[in-house]
Length: 67
Image (tube, rainbow, N blue to C red; front, side, top):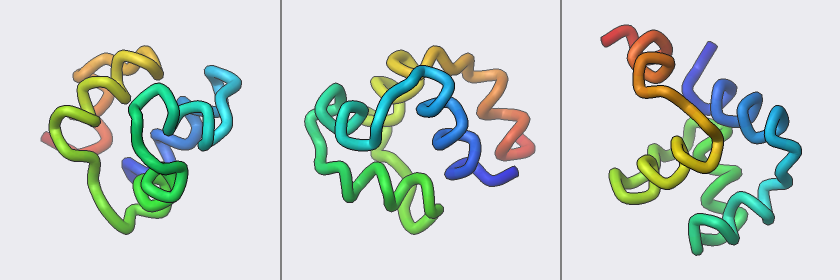
């Protein structure tokens, strides 16, 4: 599973649209699309907010990224 797929699954689990998630991060929904398609990675500030909003533990990210 890629990071983008993981983020998409978590967003769907939280019953959020890309637009709703983008609003919580104060970014465009197109940026969320880019994250989910692995076209770009979130900036650290956005990543921290994203993880909080989606209830993601850093250990989950470590597994996805094989860190």
